[in-house]
Structures are given as structure tokens and as C-alpha cells.
Amino acid sequence: MITPIRASARRGTALLDRLHEAVVVADGAMGTALYERGVFINQSFDALCLTQPELVAAVHRQYRSAGAELLETNTFGANRSRLAGHGLEDQVRDINAAGVRLAREAAGEEAWVGGSMGPVGVAGQVAGQFSAEDLERIFGEQAEALLEAGVDAFVVETIPWLVEMEAALSAIRRLDSGIPVIAMMTFNEEGETQGGETPEIVVDRLVAAGADVIGANCSVGPKPMLDVVARMTRSDVLLAAMPNAGLPQSVEGRLLYMASAEYFGKYARRFVKAGVRLLGGCCGTTPEHVRQMKREVAGFAPGRESRRAAVPGAVAEAPVRRGRSPEERTALARRLAEPDAFVTSVELTPPKSADIGELVESVRALAAAGVDAVNIPEYARISPRPTPLAIARALRDAVPGMETIIHYCCRDRNLYGMQADLLSAHALDVKNVLIITGDPPKAGEYAVPTAVFDVDSIGLTRVAAGLGRGIDAAGRETGIPLSLNIGVGVNPGAIDIQREIDRFRRKLEAGAEFAMTQPVYDPLLLESFLDELGEPQVPILVGILPLHSYRNAEFLHNEVPGMRIPEPVRERIRAAEGQRASRAEGVAIAREALAGVRSLRGVRGVYVMPPFGRYELALEVLGL
Image (cartoon, rainbow, N blue to C red; front, side, top):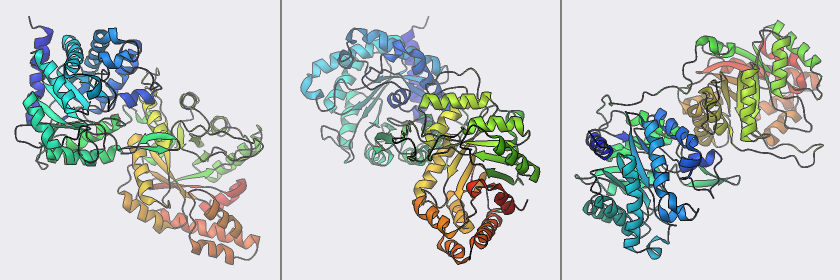
């Protein structure tokens, strides 16, 4: 009979054999993933293995679905020293055992489980607070608990001092288990540990201490970490790299990790070319980062970019939307998927009262004229109005066959409320949803309007895509997958065009299925944006906003965020004499813009934004 430890040793040997032949992709961050799911930082994240096991298991499953072949246990701080800060020092064995069980259930037979072991104390206090014997005793207790629970490898990570890492390796080797050890130090942007050791010193010392895989994790993003691991290269060393998603940045009071999944994918290849065999992510990385790394490095032999081969046990890359039949897609989604499609939509102005009868009649007239859809914005100014979801539901009953697109912004509701609204949209059969971050609310009758912004449009798109797989933001199953058609906004006239392109790509990675642009007046500007972007992966509806006066044009250009009206266009409106001439010139400019964008790559339609609810202007622009 094979004992659990012998079975683990056998799996660990298979892991080392695999690392000698190909790249193994590990998972990403656990701590930041749990934090994003509402776990406060003053809690023991490790204790969640006992108190909220399904939450931890959901993160493991998402990483496994993204293609991770090594899942790390949620035991980074599950040593006696760290747990003592939460009064849990007597639960070392129980927490580590639960952590291994949860990771093993998600890993199944095709992936390995690595027992995560982090530093024993707060950075900067470790060496002074503990003797080498103390460190070895603390690490030894945790390592023994992980070993008994059946890990395939020990992952000693984010260690800032060599004396601490050497104590951990000594404690593990005393167990004489045959389980491989992955040892990753943390380095600063100058390429040194907290103790001042260089990568060259670290790799020599860790080889002597018996580490099987050596590398770096946490602290820095891909670029500085690549410099570090390149300095560790030795013919007898298996290298590992698990960087953060860049350094955290403060955005409107929140610390966010900004490195996109696509950026990680690009650096994944560079790590492999440098000889890295074990590649994963640390703080701020998500299943999308892992999925992108997996896609980029699958089949590349380390250091030989041109060689591609099938990777045993790899999880096939799948689209964000899985298993949705054509019948489950909205009529708009099916229409946009047609190669020669050109969809027309008109943006509505929500009424000031709960009486939407006049709006219904206007939409009936638009339908009779041949308009394919109407889109309903959130109203940010002055006073409350009926919600887009309510209007859309009423229109579906009153004007059968008219497709509706509701705008949904992150400004007004917290994350729980937003998920509830998306569930409601599915239940009410209002399934075309344009997700936008939203502008700050405008002051009106309410002196101090409050904005929420729990997430931005990228984050909410990712949440909506998860709901499409039947999983909410906390990793819980929702009962049924939602069949939402998720749209996002994009501004081809943004001042910082590279930032806009990066954000748009991140929206696509998060799960967007179509896009709607800010108003376009210069088709060449949109064409240049599309060329810079590369082949769009989703159909695009171009915004067309007919101007009605020079003052209107100047206001939009100078005071509305994201609007950019070229000077020649403003001059054409200024030169028009009188209200009727200005209106006619505004329609002419809009029609020219529509004609100019119609044949651009990726454009599948337009949506017209008539000012002040003058829907007859929209029909003029569309030629209906």
C-alpha cells in the first residue's frame, strides 16, 4: 500500500520531471483575490480555510479553470508566529490540513498542489525578533502539517532574508520526505533582498541549502523581476518567477495593481526565454493573468521560443462565455455576429417623471421607421429619473421586437447592488447591457450627491462575465448562468490614447462582447484608433451626436469629459447662420461621419444621440 507521503513524493518527482521538460504555469494571487471578495485585511486569510472553505475553494477552481497546473494552498501565513496575532497559534495543523484539502479538491488528478509557506513575521523585524533556531522550529511545524496533509511540493515564498530562507529549507530537509522545495526570495527594484543580498549570492546559497527550484516572487512587477531571475541563471538550476501585477497605485483612494493580463502574457514569453520553468503570479494577479500566461507559453520549451509542442495536461483556452447556444443569445448579439451587419440604434432621453407613455410612442415611431434598437442611458444630472432597466422592460412589452441596450454605470450602487441588478436584468429578459464606469453625479436638487464606485467598468465587466458562468464576485454559484450580452464603452478621441487602448483591451479580456464609442466626428480619428488597436475582437457601434448650435459644440468640446470635436467641425457650425441652418449643418456633419465610419474594420453599426429627445433628428441622420 502506498502511504500518503510516498504518493506525494511520487507526484513531486513528476513535477520536477515536468519542469525539466517544459514550462509549468502556477496560479496567481490568493490574498488579493480574497480581499476583493470582501475579506478585511485585519482577518487571518489562512483561517478562512476553516471558516469559509467554499470561498477559498472558489478561488482555487477559478485558477484551475484558467489553466494553472500548480495550485498553492491558502496557507501563506499559517505558521505559529503569524497566527498568534489572531489568537490562532494552536490551529497550525488544522488550518494547513484544510488548506491542502481545498487545493487538492480543485487540482484533481491533472494539477499539483504546492504548500505555501510565507515569512514568519513582519518584514524588517524577522531577523531581530527570532533566532535561527526559532525560525527553524516555526517553519518545521508548518512543513510537517503540510507534509502530513499531502502536498506535492513545498513553496517557500516572499522571504526577505536569506537567514530566514535557509532556516526554512533546513527545517524541511529534516523531514527527509523526498518532497521537492520551491524557494522564492523577494527583491526590491534595485535587485536586492531586504538583507542586501544580490540574485547571484541568493542562487548560490539556496543551491547549497538544497532547494530544488529557485526564484523570485512578489514585491515588484514583471520587468524588474525578469532582470533578477536572469541574474540567477545557472545550468543546474530550475528557475521560478511569480511577479506582482506591477506596483500598486492609488486611484481615487484605492490601491490598485495596474499590470494587465495582456502585459503579463508578453512578459511570460520573456521569462521563458530567460530560462524560467515555473511561472505564476503574486499580488494583484487574477485568473485572467494566468489564462493569458498559459496561452502565451503553452508549448514553449524554456529558452527556445520557436519550439512549440502539445503540453500534457494543459487546460484548453476557452472563451469567457462557455456553452451558450445561438438561441440563448440576444437578437442584437446574433445580428452583430453577422459579417455584413450594420445595426442602427437611437439613444433615448429618460423622462423626468414615472410617466413613460410619450417615450413609448416615440419608440414606436422609431420602430416603424426601421430602427433596430434603442439604448437607454443612466441619467447623472439634476434629478432622479426612471432607471434604464425599468424603461427597457416596459418597452419590450409595449414595442415587441425592439431591442433595448441599457447603460449600467458603477457610480450609484455598491457591488452587491450591481450584481443584484444584473441578475434582475436577466430575469426580466433585458439582456443587452452596456457597462460604463460613469461620471461623478451632478449636483442638483440634492446638495451632496454620493458616488460609490466599488469597481470600475473593467471590474464590473469581469463580474458580469463571471455571472455568465454562474459564479458571483465572491466565487459562489448563482444557480443559473446569466445570458447577458455585455458591452463596454471606448473613446477613440481620448487624450491619452495608449491608456484608452490598454483599458479597452482589459475590458475585452474581462469579457466584453461588443463596444460603443464616444461620439465620432472625424472618421480618420477612429480609423487611426482601430489601426493602433489591431483587429477588434468584438463588434463596434459608433456614436453619432448631431450638433444643433455652435454654443452646443463649444460646451461639448470644452466641458464634457471624453468629448472631442475637431476645430473644423466647430467652425462649420459657427459659420451657419441662424437656428435652422445650424441644425441642418449639424445633421449634415453627422451624416458625413456616419458614411465615413460605415466601412471601417470592426464597425457593425451606429447609435445616434439626438439632443433633447428630438428623435426626428436621429431619423434624418440615419436617412430613415
